[in-house]
Image (cartoon, rainbow over all chains, first blue to last red; front, top):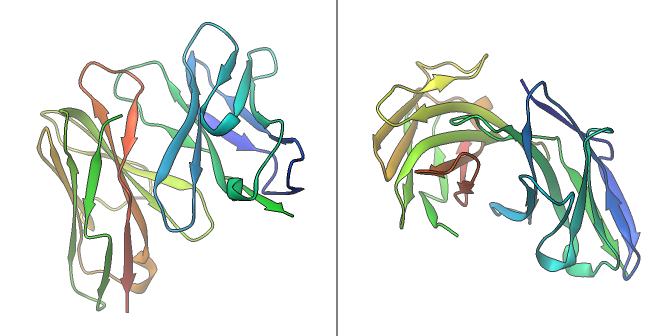
Length: 114
Length: 116
């Protein structure tokens, strides 16, 4: 079974500052890793995913994440945030076996202020 | 990406009644369908998984007689909350996996259920 730990429940930052949202995972098999964003009262939007290959993945809205197998981490970063980035961010993991669902972390609330 | 719709987007019902939520894929065939529940300010919790041609598999702690899942076709899944109670009030989100993909999940916009 897989599990995900998002280390920060809330991250407040000022506009144009860099941000890192931390995510660690646990799994006994190879995994796929994802970051999703959820705006208030909306569904999930995929930011980026790691399937294989390059450990640095780039996503939408200027976000990127780095897969670190030795540290079992998949931290999300953005060099300069905007007010519009204020949202809930979820890290998710699934095994590479067919039919398995995404398992989500508890989420991190990113609050960007001016 | 694929488009997934859910209907209704919001529903208010009285305690003891049943509510059906539909999840449709609009432009692809979904071989695996998932239902999640999200309580306010919490994460998505997987409720059940249904694969093509088989009954839904429920996660531990989810009552299969209360949350009836029907994988009606490759483009439609329904979740029926039977004899709803206020504690069932939540945000229900469906997710579909495309035929031939081992990882890609597309999410519906969610259904806000309020039981009074």
